[in-house]
Image 1: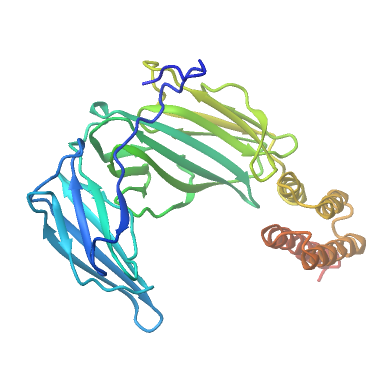
Image 2: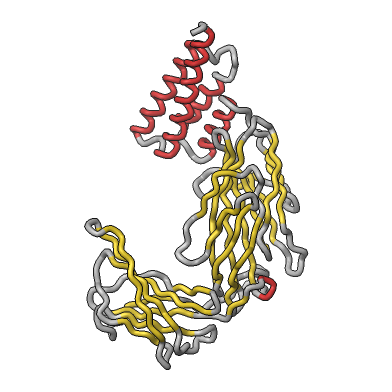
Amino acid sequence: MGGMEANGQATNPHALAEAPENASREDEALAKGTIRIRVRNEKGEPVANQVVILGVLENSVAKGERREQFNKLTDASGDAVFESQRVASGLAYRVRTFREGAVFFAPPFTLGETRGTNVLIHVFPVVREVEKAQIAFETVLFSELRDDRIQFDEVFTIHNLGSSAWLAEGVTLALPKAATGFSAQQSMSDQAVTQLDGKGISLRGTFAPGEHRLSFRWQLPLRNESEMNFTIGLPPHVAIIRVGTAVIPGLSLRASGLPPAQVSPLQDGGKALMTERLMKPKEKPLDELQVTLAGLPEAGLGRLVGNITYEIASGVTALVIALALVAWSLVSPKRRDTAGSRQALLEAITNLEDAHARGDVGPKSFEHLRRELLDQLALSLLLGQSSRGV
């Protein structure tokens, strides 16, 4: 792994080797409604007497969702043919097969109106111990400040550089004990990240040669502290680690074993504090990461300012800057229960709605900022009533 490119630049030592491709393609030599499945091994050789499953998913307004599946064995040429399959816009097909507990999938497809489809699917030798697999992980942890919590998004990119499939079983990673709100993106294969009560998360599934990506989300509550420290577990054979957070004035980020974070541009035009590390071959792997977020804004309007400032950093228009200035003017406790502060909030809400109607503020930013301003207006009214003894 690794080497030099033609221009003399060093290549990534964890670069992905080419993997056999699973694919589906229409074939004019096949009759309409015909699906020919070709099963091949890691060397591209036919696999005879292999069970293949053809799954059918039908979605319609009248019938809702309906699933069927058909089984066949491949012949001496490694092929299995399904004829007279239905052709309709609401029908999708998926092919899978098995070996030693691992599941191998071909991409889903639809049937054409005039010809059949060839489906190519590969099966590989299976290893369960990650030490016996040529696996390299890229892991990304990104955080954003919310009203009363910090939201964390994690992405695992798994590179299988070998010729065997890794069947992940019982791979557990720690999350902070206070973590809540776990959710994971659904996969179209058997790959999954699931939550373990009190023990973090579990990684499982079949990772054939090639690249795979899994993402999940969790949260930590904010308790009006200026600094948060926590530790997360890292997957095995980590090659690249990236940690980042949305830019908020005064906020700093540190991650153990990684260089100091620096401000970096994002694809949407915003900015983030980012740090990363490319592990060297044969370097002692990291099995956990300690992260510190310092300079967190205080609860209430101070945090509102931080959230609005993030919206500004993400590319929101100059009107939002004006709204942020309104929020700054309300920070003083002496003004929090005055009629002037409520009037300023009402004007800010009106201006925000006008800007949204003109298309100057996008729907996501509009909903977020409007909710924050309404919350502060309700708080101002409540405090005003309390000061009058009502």
